[in-house]
Image (tube, rainbow, N blue to C red; front, side, top):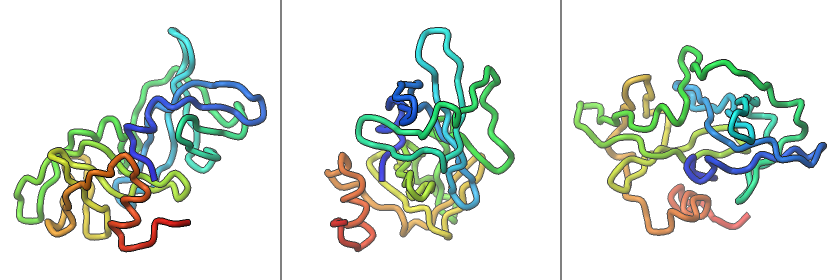
Length: 176
């Protein structure tokens, strides 16, 4: 597990060419099932292009770098960033209102906890140090996130280790 903010700006390295291709910039996810479809990569240099890569083609999101198999897996383009219907970019979804089913304001989306192996957004961090798991009861739409109030929890102090915290939150064992 990793947070969007911690992964943003990580160097993207190709394993075949052994080259730095750019930095991880953003990801696009489905508002219905929270699947990550692809990542946006910002090329190196001042006048560089941006590119996209399908989520399943990232081989590893590590602490310091992101690995892809080959530079050819990235589709470089000068086109703008437009979300497909029913999807959102993580960076543009930050700030979206989170509300209870009764319409009470719970906060705003501040960050995401995602699993790059499963290509899935698992939870959202709200402002004021709270987290909400994205279960089937959560409804994410283009203008708001509707949550069952019982799914919102205070974020513990070990936020810097999201995988260990997430395992304890889910009631599992953090050892692999």
